[in-house]
Amino acid sequence: MHELLEDTVQHTMTSRARTVAPEMTVGELLHLFSAEQRDAYPVVSNEILVGIVSSSDALKAFVSNDVSLRDHDVIETTVGAIMTCHVMTVESATSLRHALQLMAAYRFKTLPVVDGKNHLKGMISRNDIVRTLARRTPCDTLPSNAPAAGYYSIA
Image (cartoon, rainbow, N blue to C red):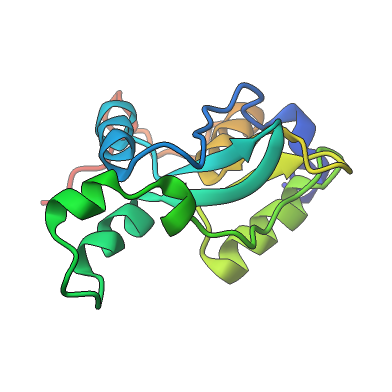
């Protein structure tokens, strides 16, 4: 299984990653999170990765220490005001092992994949890696009495 993780991010990443602009409002972002069931979006301006915004970032804006902010004000706040600007990234030549190590160490679910000029090339997620490993791993280790769907029932 070790050699499976030596493949590069380029072969596993989602290359057509959905991005958001820093000018998008929190209200618009909440609709995206709801519709697309994602945990985070890369924030891109002029084709350059400038940050990442997670559903946690959006929700934290509602519990700000600034008591003068009303919910309406938060809804109109821009993604640029709540995003994380210092983003850990990987390049497409990064091994899956290294990407997974970063995800585990920092508890990230996704990492942006960029080139040398910080142009977004895609996103690599834990789910992408799981799918790749599952495709390349023989599935002969399930007990013979396992349900057809591959789930175990707990009695």
